[in-house]
Length: 156
Image 1 (cartoon, rainbow, N blue to C red):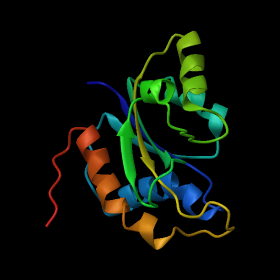
Image 2 (tube, rainbow, N blue to C red; image 1 turned 180 degrees about the vertical axis):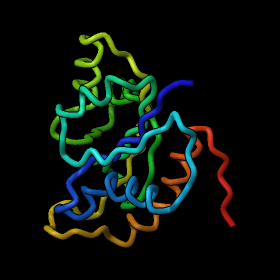
Image 3 (spheres, rainbow, N blue to C red; image 1 turned 45 degrees about the vertical axis):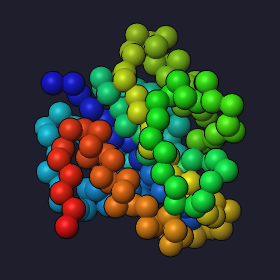
């Protein structure tokens, strides 16, 4: 089995910037049973410090705020190659995911990576909360995560 990491990143002190962390914590609290080869980590703002952790996985699903010109709460699912080939202005954080993946490759790791990005409404306000439009996207993001790790999604 491929070891899979679900990695939520972001700064929870800056409202919607913490959406990745919020989602992985919601997933942990939901009681959803994930296969034994799947781990969930709150990466917060660790950036480069996550490289040794990421090195251990064959597949990584990253959840983060995505700065793109779209409605708050819009959800995108893509591979890192999209970041290189896109003419759109897309940003994930100060340290680009491609730089981190390049560092992993230099160290001999080449995980399959997928990114689930949520368009934030407010990343400036110092508040531990997420805006309503972004909160509305959380169930869809959780479904995408489960789909990414091969779990069946059953919503009533």
